[in-house]
Length: 164
Image 1 (cartoon, rainbow, N blue to C red):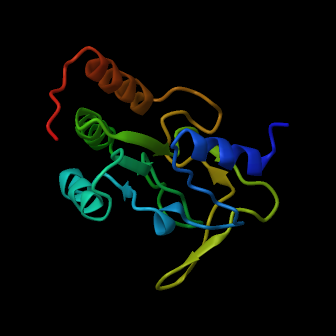
Image 2 (spheres, rainbow, N blue to C red):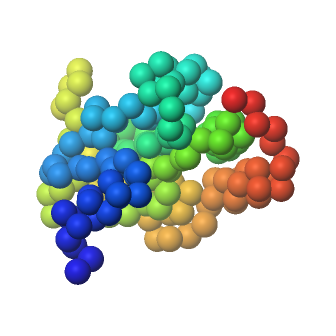
């Protein structure tokens, strides 16, 4: 059926696809494969040059392009500027890169699955996974979604030059 992992992996291998497999509860793909993850403050050209150093062939991939960020209890609502998201997305697409947006649509963590971070202090994550995403937790379009749509439309229409 559609849950036959062994068949899927064999099929992917036969047609020459690479598979990022996360058997976890938490295994980070960017640790196992050479892919780029970035927020809107990364020099994307430098990041893809670094990817090419370890993987000279194959697609340019940003496996986790952060369109927003999660919220912690008691902190200000996290957000990533729409203009910065649009600009970086346009740069990556103009290079011919594949981009996976994390998160594209917000959601909700149920039970106690929301988790926490501990860097300099313990910070509980809220159950709302709004993530300042292009589609809200309720599935509503945001200005960020419309800006991303315009970037994709411009790339498809040839409005961006390939710079890589």
